[in-house]
Every structure is written in C-alpha cells, then in structure tokens.
Length: 576
Image (cartoon, rainbow, N blue to C red):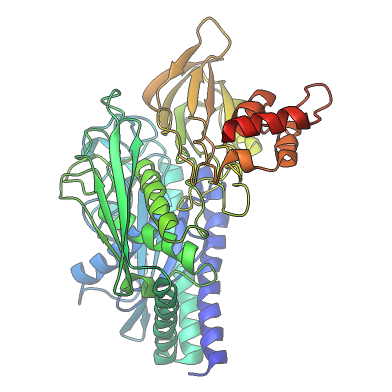
C-alpha cells in the first residue's frame, strides 16, 4: 500500500469516528450527552483491536476494548447483520460503572464480519438506591443501578422490545434514558453505512491492512521514544483518596512505579485493600487510560490504537484491592481512583522524562447530581453535572484553568442550558483565587460554582475528592489548594460538606457552593518571574498575601507595583 492510500484510508476512518460523535451530540436526549459530551465512539477491526476513536473520553477506551472482545467470545457464530449488543455490567465484560451504557454493532460485508463499532454513553438515571443512581455511599454493586450483561438490543435491524421495556422500567427518567440509548443504536447504524462505503471503495483487505499498518507505525514510533529512556525503575509514587464515602476517617493509598526494560514500559500499580464504598477501579479501565497517558507524553501527534498495547504492560495488586476489586465491590465513583492513579503514573513518568511531563492535575473533578419533581411540570427530573479543577503546570508553561486530568475529557453544563431545563439558579461560577499549586509555572485554577435550589425538594449526590489530600507539585513546586463544599454559605445554617454526599435532601432556597482544587505547580515558585506573579494578582488568580507567602513577591495593594527591594530581600532570605 502506498503512503497516499494509507493516509487517505486512515483519515477516512477517523472522520467516520468523528461523524459518529457529532451525530450523537445532535440526537442525544440528556444534558450529559448534549452538553457534557460524556460519551465515546470507537472503531475496532475484526480481531477486536482499537483502530480509531472520535472525540474520546479516555476512561471509556479500556471498557470498550474489553466489551468488544467479550462480545466476540460470547457470541461467536451467533452474530448476524443488523445485530447490536448492549452491556453495562462492571464485572461482565468490564464497565466503568453501571450508568455508563455500551452499544456495540458488528460490521458485515456480505456474510463476513470485518469490524465493530462501539460506543459508551453516560445515563443520568438507571435506577439504584438514590435518584441519579450513583450513590457516594453504596456498599455493593447491586445498589448502583440496573445491571445489563451482554445482550442483543437489536436483532436483524429490529429493536428488542422486551429488553427496551425492561430498561425503561428500571429508570426514573425512562424517556431520557431510552432516548439516549436509542441515539446510541441509531448512530452506530449510521456508522455501519459509512464503513460499508469505505470497504466498498477500497476493498476489505486494503482497509484492514491500513489499520494494521497504523498499529505498526505507533508501535515503531513508541519503541524509538522508549529507547531514549535509561533503563531502571522510577518510583514508587504515592497518593491518597480522601475516603470511600462510608468510612469518612480513612484515606486510601494508590501507588505506581515505572520499569523501563527491554524496550518496553511496565507500570506496577499497588493500592490498599478494596474499599467498602464505591471508589474501587476495575483493571481494564486503568490499563487503557495508562496507554493514553503514554501516548500523550511520547506520541502527541499519533493516534491511539492497538499498537500501543504491544509495548505497555500494567501489573496489579491481588484481587480484592482497590485497583483490582472483587465482585460485587461497588465502583460507581471510579473516576476518583482513576484521577489519583493518573497522578502517580504521571509523577513516575516525570522521573523518567522530566522535561516532558506536566505536574498532576487537580484530581478533584467530580459530579453533582440533583433529582426531584420539577415545580413547573410535576415530572421527575434528573440533573447530572460534571466539573473540573485545573490541569497541572507544564515544564514550559502554566497549567490550564477549569480543565482537569488528562484522562477526563468532558465538558461542563452551560449555565443557560442548566437553568432552562432544571429548577436551579447558578449564582456564582468563577475561577477560585489561590486554588492553583504555586511553582515556576503554576497549576491551572480550579472553579467555584454555587447553586440555589428552586424546587420544593431535591436529592443531592456529590462525588468528588481532594478535600484532604491536595494535588502535589513537581520539582520543588508547592501543592494546590484543597477542594471544599459548603451548604448555605454566609448564613446561620452554614455547614461544610464532605467530598462524598449521598441523598442529601435540600429544599427551596437552599444554596450549595463547591470549590474545586487547582492543579499542581512545576518548579520552585521563588524562581517564577515576578512580573508573571504581578499579572496573576491583577487578574485575581493569586492574592497579594499568597504572592508574598508562596512566591516571595511583594505587591503594593494600591497600584499593584512590585516592591523590587523587598522582593529581592525576601527571595534571598528564602534561598538561604
């Protein structure tokens, strides 16, 4: 195959994956789809290897790979054109958590199965012990909503109505839930048409050969990058989750080391025993987002595909651990350990290639869900929002504010969309001063958002972290400011909340304020250019007190000028 044809087929495949993403945005029902974009489409070859993805949520890639291959095993010889499969069971084919629902469609050319299309999309409610499904204090999987093993949701092009009825009977919002699932099915069907056109135009073997060659390219390029790293073990790096939502006094350890040997990267993960609460993380989820992290560091201009898997391996603690839980351990807060795992993996990578890896992000990005009866319609609503802290500082630049860990790639819900659909008023939405980790380059700032409840009653679930253990910096930088949440701030009823809240009943005019941590800094903060510190003070990113305390820069509060003499003296004293 010549280089032009190789590139044309490759880009055509990527374009199909991107089109599927846009179609889902247009046809999804819930705000978590239309606004937050908490879904991923990907294309796989006939052997179940990833070859292309749309705009991805990296935490979805591992489950999709596992699920496509589970469908291949379970339904070998029983798959026909027009079939589509559905699954959301975390321990049957692997899933992040039950509210992420997967639809997989096999691609046929004639009678030959040649590829698969898979997608995962979050659901705002799928039953469970609390409205919104994901309970921060769930203690087993069966409290976390409807569980669907691999089943056919479409047979010969026709919807399995019995299964549709069963799904709709197990959600508080059947119209929205089924609307999203139907959009997943129909979008896959559109993808079948587009892939058929691609196979018709170039031939099955040419397309499959192109996909294979691109996997080889990624492997070859990654091998070159690994060869530049001195062999050895980097780490362990250790971090902690606040708690598991059940035992609020106990933190949970996660660690990672990186072994570079024989032209391969071997990540060694460890953790405390599995948690009673829902902060456990299935291995298939972390396996593939670690590959995504490797790609981001070493191959930013190449795609994610099965070629990366050939040179990256991950080992886990024994079954029954937080990073390798035993059925039926709850997992609905899987993003929290994913973010902490990202933190320790990136810190291990930073030791191996220090000039190429950013500091850890906030690892505080989480979700808030609210459910109740809408006062205008009397119908049940389920509001689900995702929020971000700040990214870690880069070796050459500050972190990005209001953006979270590298493995979380979802959007927030715009205020206008939120207030037009749900009985809530957003009274504050801003960057949080001093939330970022100080450094030669500072982390990105976290955000603060404040809601006023307009319904008579609303059940609130808060699923986040970093209230106790702020994100650390790299290379002498300081940690970020921790997150915090407060109910009814500035009133006699003010009270702080923990990072995990389940089924909290709020009433009309109650106010909830949530501030997310920023990202860690990179490098000694006393080496930051004083003019950059002054600019941060003027923009409200850093307070005058923090400029002096953390950066050794003395700012005049009247005209924001730098006191050069006092600044020089303060920095010399600190260096001594």
